[in-house]
Image 1 (tube, helix red, strand yellow):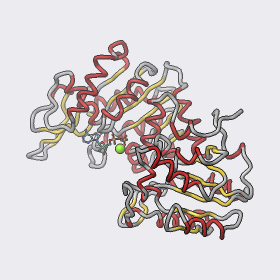
Image 2: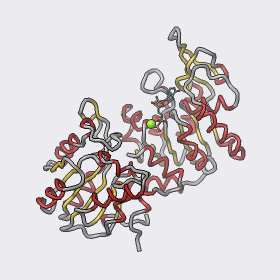
Image 3: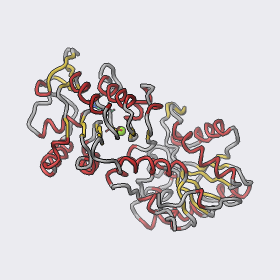
Length: 398
Ligand code: ADP
Ligand code: MG
């Protein structure tokens, strides 16, 4: 990696602003998955041991510039304190007097967590002057900056990007370093034996990823509702299956512009569909979807075919479930790919988002070489051939 990390600088006795990704799923004020908080611990502990005053900032949800009590980071402060077995000073604001007071009261090794940066419109503002004005306030109490929020590094926001204009040095945390290193290995993989599996619902979001990967892989396996967009673009019947016009346009674009590489792409051979009126389900060949039916998963022939390819791969990158996995039995396709990845002795990476939820739910996360903490960020990393705006803004190694 050509960016400096916390190991390249001396943080002892310094006030360090650390952007973390604490955008955890919550239900009724309780954290349902603390993976992202755990993932930030190595950096936080490293800086504490160095004797830094650790000032954490993060966003949660989409409060869009308003103070939304349900999107307070307070519960993440409590969880972080439990995980560290040490107090965390939560500040009910992320800029201004309250923050200045908390920082002034802190000793080396102390951890402060600031309230949701998205409570201020400047955080995400498209108006650069407004974004930078907020970033300057956020940077004010600190002497250096660490980005450990991999999951937010595709965003040019005040806390991920703007603050780098006001602080020096600006370095990567250990999670960002690990994510970049492990995802880069995917981009560097030999074409021979490189298999990508893409699914999920939004083709339009993943067009750039398909364009980047298709020429680089031996096989690109398509599943999930994404496949129906390709079916429809080829004039096939998809009944009532999930598919937007935008997705069909995206699929059509790929079919038109990437004809040299379409031989690398595999679409489902069969599907598992459900009758919307009777609730009956059945497996049919790909060209057997009928009006009134909703294709919710890949079928058994496709499962076996994809699993065989995945198991033999040298490198596998997977993003997006193969079907409506939240509702069994439509988790069978996703489960088959997840198990095949577990059985694959090659290098395997799951690129964030709902596919991570799926493999975690299936208890298979431990068997992967890397499970990214960032869905959008890992896709954008692939799409941009290894570059993310908030990482580019950090100091380079000499
Ligand atoms: P990711 O977050 O992994 O990038 P997406 O957000 O694009 O994936 O899509 C994930 C969602 O797509 C899941 O909620 C899943 O249930 C849904 N999905 C996948 N295939 C289908 C399908 N055939 N029909 C309905 N929903 C589907
Ligand atoms: Mg998603």
